[in-house]
Image (cartoon, rainbow, N blue to C red):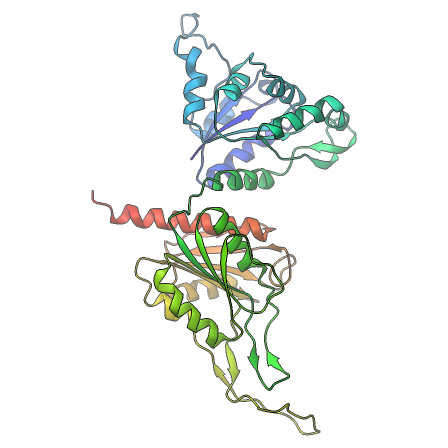
Length: 408
């Protein structure tokens, strides 16, 4: 997908260089359009070197003879037609006002009026400028017209003041780009089977073995996949979460029940994502009555539960199979071993002891280990953002597989 990045004249313009790198890392092609003010803070050559694309700086560019270039006069129309998204970061108060009022006096403002692609703006300015009624009115107008606004962060500003106005983090801006583009239903042809939550293995009528899984990660993947157009079948262990909109949910309790439902549903699935924390062992026998406490030690005989991931991946055919690896040590080594041993296409691994990762948190820190040898380490992100990155990686693997099997 092609993104047009508008860079306007503020101190935060230098941050757009890192934003370009992150967008390219996600597989986007980026072309930069700079205002005259932006060129006071960073040079077009920087963006040309980073993107490998022509950097557009003027509505009417001059030819080598000093005359107006005829092609440049309509270039804004060509760029408008081929871009999938217009992102302006940083967006100054000036550019927001021009967008809101329909002023078209340079390439970027003319492009804004000419494009029908989604628009995202990430404002950055002095706190008083941001809070001014005129700026807020312009922001509201842009939102009403369908633009997405990534609000600025609060903190110390270049002007020496403290407050709202600092450009949002590059990661937050990229997440907004992903979410906006994914709204275009790129998974509409897929049926995705997802497992989530813990399983409970009964010891007696009052007690059971389980784990700390909240199900949040699996549910985030289910919601993201449904929003991107997939038919989603969610096989859920016991959790206190609402079913995401548009998702078909099947509740189970034990590993055996989850295995049975997955076996039944998998043949109709093109993608299977096993995010559930399935108990590895269960009691050999379940007591019919509550086990009474006494002074003697109690020994439990346990047996392995069905290996759901391995059983499905062994007969996956053309389906893509994704497993999760919750580790406490040697994360990369264990994840790569699991990738091979289970015949998975992708393993999502994390250290559940890391701060902000693992069970109960709304954030996660994962590395994606792919079948083609790519290891993609992600920073701490919300679980909804991690879900999007997992789905992106699945689509990348699907495309790679198609390319390998296409006739030369």
